[in-house]
Amino acid sequence: MTATAPRICCLDLDTFFVSVERLLDPSLEGKSVIVGGRPGERGVVTACSYEIRAFGVRSGMSLANAARLAPKEAIFVPTRADTYGHYSKSVREIAGRYSPVIQVASIDELYMDLAGCEALYREPTDESDDATILRVARELTATIKKELGLPASIGIGSSRSMAKVASGLAKPAGVLLVPAGTEADLLAPLSVRKLPGIGPVAERKLSTLNITTLGQLADTRLSVLRSVFGAWAEHVKAGARGQGSSNLSRDRPAFKEHDIKGDAHGSISNERTFRQDVCEPRILEARLCSLCERVCWRARKRGVKARTVTLKLRYADFQTISRSRTIAPTCSELELFPVVKELLEKGHTRTLPIRLLGVALSKLGSFDHQISLFGADKERNEAVDAIREKFGYDALRLATGQRFRAKKA
Image 1 (cartoon, rainbow, N blue to C red):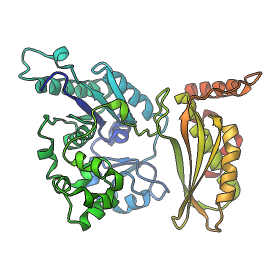
Image 2 (cartoon, rainbow, N blue to C red; image 1 turned 60 degrees about the vertical axis):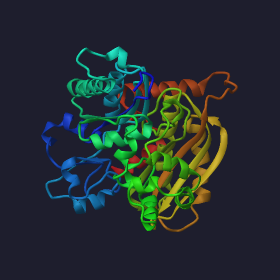
Image 3 (cartoon, one colour; image 1 turned 30 degrees about the vertical axis):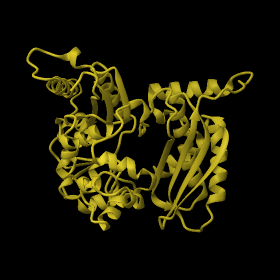
């Protein structure tokens, strides 16, 4: 392998939220832990320890289902939204010592490009370029463990998707390098779900075609795969062969409460599930206000504004609707809330109570606009964000949004 060959590394923090909770409370070590809320609460499992996965508990599962599956000794822990980001940032800083190119994918996952770094890190005892990269990756995970106490896994491949698959196979706390040219052989026996982008719906459709492994998927005609993936069929087929992009700058990262300054990719969204289905307008309005605050705060962290806002509404019977509107570019909750409130009033057409509300900002960018004479909005936003930076996000809230918190308490 030449020094300029792709060297994409996927660094994944193992059971990140659980690992942080164990740092804060060492008594949780080795126990069955579910992070996300208390038994019986509405909401979903944010993360769960390996010890409890044997019982069928998984991330994304409702807390109610997790409580039914979990053993009685399982420990449920609420999330600490303003705590995990500090550890994630520290991991990025450590990764920056090893690679000049880093792309954050989520709060617990990032990608690095080590192409051409073999000569930089080579030691006399390294038998090959692959050995050099493997050693460096192991040093990186060891450094994260030593300095932060967090376990991490790394997958290394010739593409982003291959590195992602490898990191999953390396878990827990392992490192796996897939040499160029061996990708298809490694992937062939794996379940189709191992390929990023293939979810349960696509898996079921493929199963009806007797396609259960990535090897079978790679050998299937494009005309057949288009019935499942449409225009993405060729991309998926290439991925099943281990082929994919190695250009991190072209792949859109998926952010989860994790915002990088200047990033205008994709959208910024937050949603909340009520503990009990709600039909009281004032409670809905208060939750909507707090969601507007959250997405606008995140937009300001990125330094962007949005031209489109979308309201998501889910009824008690799980029917989900969305309503969008084009707006003047903004990152101000004072400007956004009246718009979203109107979307809710027009979109809430049924008498059923509401289970979930969500707000999303899209068409992001840095837009020139006429600055107000006194700059009141800008000064207000800067003051609010400075207080939150020092004392935490919940230190300052709009009164309308605070109603919901008081009601919940």
